[in-house]
Amino acid sequence: MKTNQDVQVYDYVHTGVEKVSIFRTIINFILGIAIIASLIILITGVGYIEHTSSPEFLFQQGLSHIQKAEQSESPSVRQQYFQLGFDSFMKAAEQENAAAQYMVGYWLSEGGDGVDLDIPNGISWLEKSAAKDNDAAMTHLAQLYLISDGYIDYEKAYAWSLKAANLNNGRAMYFLHLLTADDTFQYYNENESLGWLKKAVDAGDPDAMFNLAVTKFEVFSSSSKTNDDNPFESMKEITTLLKKSAEKGNNKATELLKKLGQE
Image (cartoon, rainbow, N blue to C red; front, side, top):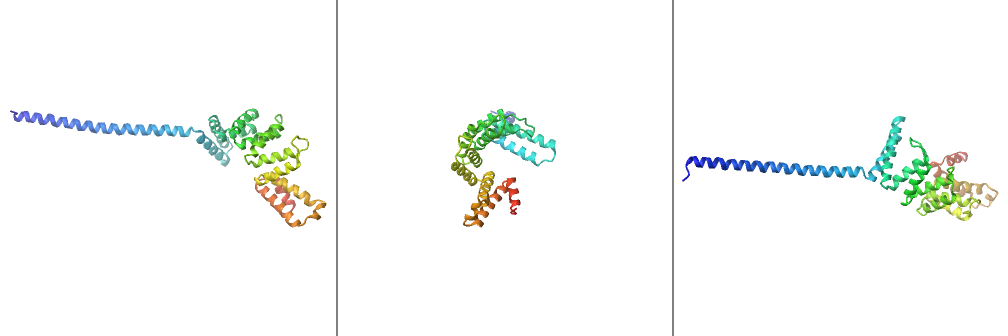
């Protein structure tokens, strides 16, 4: 038979066990929440690191740096942001981002803004981008092979221009016009040259617009203009081409418009 003292001892021990059990439950609950929170933070942190080191993020970061550089009036700040931009593009390019490879290749092949001119290295990066069907890289390669001293190669210029033109690049079409218009080149073909010129105009190339306008103006100004059924419409077409070219930054078109009194 339990005495009152035994009952008190039992109640005390039983109550103590319950308190310890509740306390442990609370502690375990808190620890569980802490562990889950830590896992969420860890997963989020890893995801953020992966995101900020992705080639797409680095490329956009590079563009942001360039924008800040162009907006700054301080030479030192501009230089700092240009360097940050180039570094971001390089990191993205090393991760096989075609757009970044083009930017790096373009920058190296042109030099400036703190980046030393390095045409061979620039060509290497442009070729990597072009291999991923980047038509801008193809077109810049064609331009380098057309006009860069020590690197002129008309066969490569024609090949890259043709590949980019097949991707509907207007600038490449204009280059093909130039290559097929020169009777010293193996690609010389007057009809094909005019065809590429018109395609380049349709694709919005400003130099092509200017050249076609000049060609039409020469015809209009020649003695054959008397055979023009509608000289007003011909001149209107010429002016329209010049204005579109000028709007896209062609300074020669702007100058010719002034001479024609159409600025």
